[in-house]
Image (cartoon, rainbow, N blue to C red; front, side, top):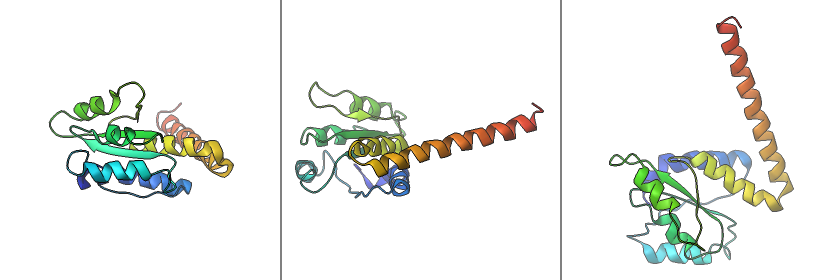
Length: 157
C-alpha cells in the first residue's frame, strides 16, 4: 500500500486471500517517498516467490504503475478513495498506463475484487485454489438466493 492509511482497504483484500488460503505479504511503499524500495521490491518479487502484486494507493496513486514498470508480473491496482476527489484521481492515475506497462485496475476501494482477481491468476497453475474459488462463488450464489427468499417472504411474493 502507498500509505498506512490505506490499511482499512487492504485488510479487505487480506481477508479474501486468507479465506482462499493464498499466502501474501503486506508492505508500505510510496512511489514518491520510497521509490528505491518500491523498485527493489518489484524487481525482486518473482525471485521472492510472488506471482501477482496488488497495489493500493490514493491521491496521485502512482504505486501500481511504479511497481508495474519494474516487473513483468501481473499488477492489480486498487484506487483508494480520498476526501479531495472521492477517489477519481486515484482511479485515473491507476488505470491510465502506457502501452506495454499494464495495470489491471479494480473499482475505487475494490480490494475484495483485487484479491479474487489475483487468486484467479494464481489458480491458472493451482487446481486446489481453482476449486476453492468455485466454492466461494457457489457460497455467494447461495447467499444471494437466501436473501431473495427473505425479501420475497417479507413482501408476500
